Image (tube, rainbow, N blue to C red):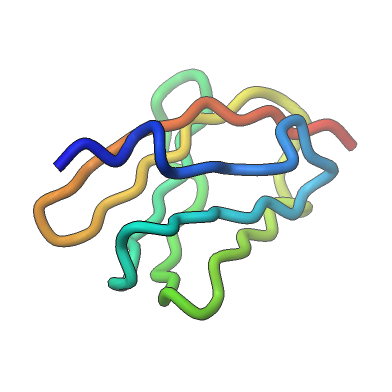
Amino acid sequence: MEVNNEVSVYPNPSNGIFVIENPVISKDWNVKIYNINGDLVHSVLLNAENLKIDLAHLPSTYYILKLESENIILTKKISFIK
């Protein structure tokens, strides 16, 4: 199933709070945030009701957001600016 174009992460850039909008899949998401060096810096399980991520505790930079749900894995580049 191609969902990469149907999943939105906004605002991007953000001041720390990101919203994941997914009109297609209503399952839980395993969300992992990686820094530009590939280090895992944040991980959370989000349900379909609450798709917000708070990264305000992390430094301002670019991150890779990896979303996993059942047999779907997709990535998005996000920017965090304090």
